[in-house]
Length: 232
Ligand SMILES: [Fe+2]
Image 1 (cartoon, rainbow, N blue to C red):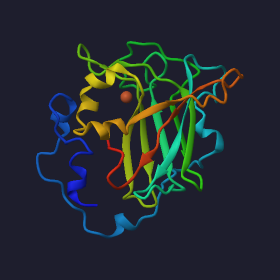
Image 2 (cartoon, rainbow, N blue to C red; image 1 turned 45 degrees about the vertical axis):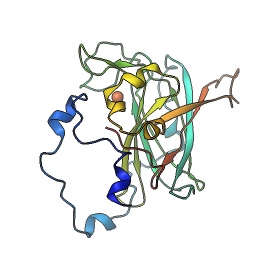
Image 3 (tube, helix red, strand yellow; image 1 turned 120 degrees about the vertical axis):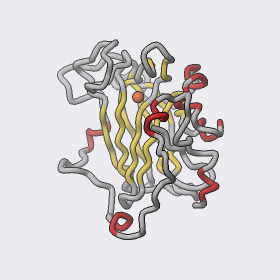
Image 4 (cartoon, helix red, strand yellow; image 1 turned 90 degrees about the horizontal axis):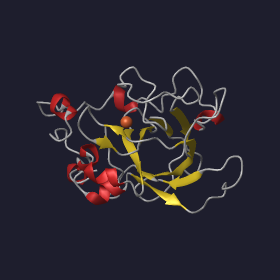
């Protein structure tokens, strides 16, 4: 991939309307690591605990049922030719249905849900497919006295080596807050931003059952002209 391909896909390090970038944007050009140990370490990295089948259901594992709209977020991890990428570790973390994270850094404006932690993970199958069951997160203030962030889920992908890492955010189709969000607007090309928006599906095969859930489809493209942008 050439440097030019990144120009309209990924946001710049410094985007003044997104205040934190004023503090974290590097002042010097990035250092290119020499090819060697780092590039050849195999991934994904799982930590000490194996990925289990139920790790992709954020609505379970607590004494009760979490509050909020239950959703299924599903899709495929694809390469530049549209082929599914198997064995990719996808980790997600998110606010609850009130807009609160289980995180000391959260300002605590909104209530916690004792039945929702907001973190999950899964591995793509042989076709590159993934699936999460969770609660639709609520919008929350991007910074005190500023703007409301659109509802979003944070997403991390680990590919076949430690050098293959993508961290981004997933939004939801039809959310008017996306257009006014400095973090979303830091992506220069609107077409690239649209690739971060999960599309509502009328394929509601669970509607009416005890597992009833709204379905959203979101594919993640790792390389090529339709690459999914990074976003932090
Ligand atoms: Fe967030």
